[in-house]
Length: 212
Image 1: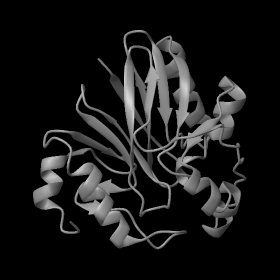
Image 2: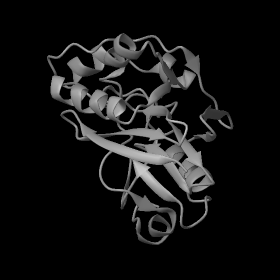
Image 3: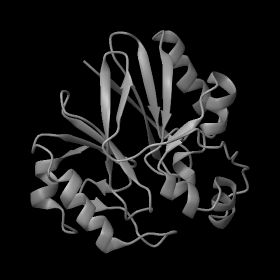
Image 4: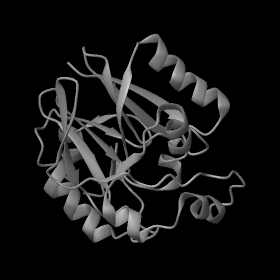
């Protein structure tokens, strides 16, 4: 059984997800902490629950989803894993921050491993399947677990909306097609955990999302 702990971090109210199972091994997805109190909230939870971080995963490399990568690398020695398309086609996190008018320096931690569609990422006795959902960014991915019936989808799909496509390499037609192909094709009761806002379900987005 996978436990999903969510945190709302940074100026963009971004959802960071910490997943772990009974072995206490864990993966951190889209680490967005950028303030000392946010870093403490995250590390306190990891310590109190005796978790061992095995992977630092990125659904995509927009700055609001990678604020905390430098902190995680310094604290736990983990480098991010992300899709090659985002690594090659997006500005560095610090450059993105400046373009958004932010004065805070964001460390660019080199991606240690490229993740690809269909790949299985393991931690403890659990696994996540990588789904490619480009369009919000060129290399956006989602992480799906069939057994527990959920997908962590980044900014591809929201409750009642979809990701913006006016940033670097975004494409609305590509995004909508990817959502239909990779996300709405999942079982109806699959819980969707987006990068911002509340969770939703595949069936709810099939029938209620005006962008799809």
